[in-house]
Length: 295
Image (cartoon, rainbow, N blue to C red):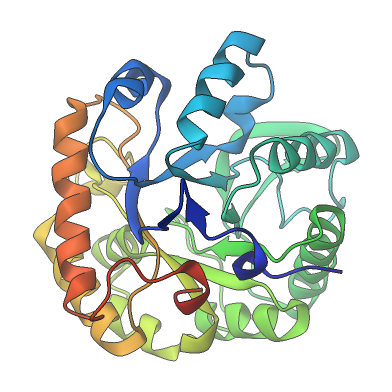
């Protein structure tokens, strides 16, 4: 069984896969189709592909001929003690088969219970029982997709009470028991630090560096004294600083700049992705390194 993402094709149009890119939102699709710049790593939310008309899939397939794709899920509910929804997982598998993305990821969160879904990524207790549930769900996902997935840390506005693990310990156990990798969202670490006083760098240094396969960068919004992970602003300087330290410690990994609301012109995202590329270049002689050297 071929489980490793690095075993997927690591070239786009004969060009080595870049390690930097941004989220692809459909409002920018015409601009991307007209864009003549170098290939990028483009991340799509998996669920946004489920009900697309065929013409939209055709346009994305055209884009896929030139750029690398990453599929990032928000609704699989890996933390659900009910297990995974078979229909949802099957739809994810269909999109993975369709686009053959270089990277596939989901969140360490739950949003479904007793057949009811909620429109949020909810935190889970870092308990042994919760770990068993997540391990089973990650293993089922990987078995279905026939590949390794990356699991992302989330921003949490109500922190779960202390349990059997801290967050880093929970994620470490998860990687050891399933072979999954970690998508480390540095903005989420930053938001949790702002809201709860958790030291973002301290948590990062406790993670298993060898299991980190991707970085996310984004911008939060302050609402009534709390910081919300809206992806509606530019990446703050504090997150860029954390990114620089992360690259120095862990090495260059595929990096996505996220911007989901109040979308700016595409050039703004390209400029942010270029800043990520420059940071990556300081951590690697060859920023065109193939994916297998980054994952």
